[in-house]
Image (spheres, helix red, strand yellow):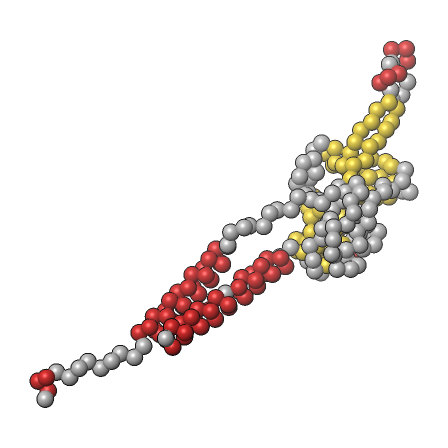
Length: 238
């Protein structure tokens, strides 16, 4: 009876320890995804590690995903490959970013901008009903050049700039100021589709489980074997 109690206690201890390394693995996996926020209005997205390769300003209070943190420039990605949007990969200055230790609920700004313009007068053959044109672009960020505001946009499969008269309006994130506890209210933005976390155990987790089970079986075998009784003396010995 005492032997069975020892076996039960050993199994309980072994399986109580099992979740510890698994939780450590989950925490390590979460730490692999890092984000940094544009906490001010002057965080540039660069096509390369040079000031001459500035593309646009990251929308204020939105995030980039950190790929590799460098001393001067940090490799990042912005937005996601989800139609009609396309992920862009580039760089931000490391000292311009504010790094965070959590995964934001709404890291990227999903916004469309519509531009209306009027075709020039085509004379007697032009149709008035076709004179006004509207085109919708996917907004990535803004920049100023010689006092003129431009939007950096995606149209179809092509990136480029269009002139604008004012900055677009959008909701601001505040989760980097406090610990996030709920999804921010949506405006013209929506959270990206997150990749579902795997439901089954990883290979490393399976190996850990098998190792613990093997140890448990070995310990149980040792306990069950216990002390062997000495064989009865042979009658010829008397």
